[in-house]
Length: 100
Figure (cartoon, rainbow, N blue to C red):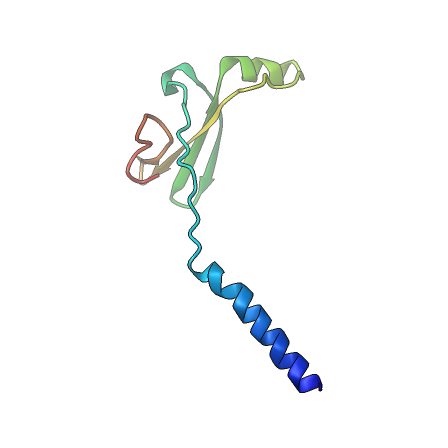
């Protein structure tokens, strides 16, 4: 009796899982609007081997941190990734770049 219950459970699981194999996931393309890098100020730099990451944000966010106040809602923090002294990736522009 147990053997038949096991076979029935496996068959039911396979029948439920079969439609999932063909199910495709469609993710929405995210297009983030980044501020101009020239309008941002340097917040900090992180170095990891040959990778240097400059983190930049708005002057308002820097001032809020200095004053121990909450960072304004909607503030951007932008990470610019340099490898071998060249920009490797950053999220800027409508196409967001080929490497991002």
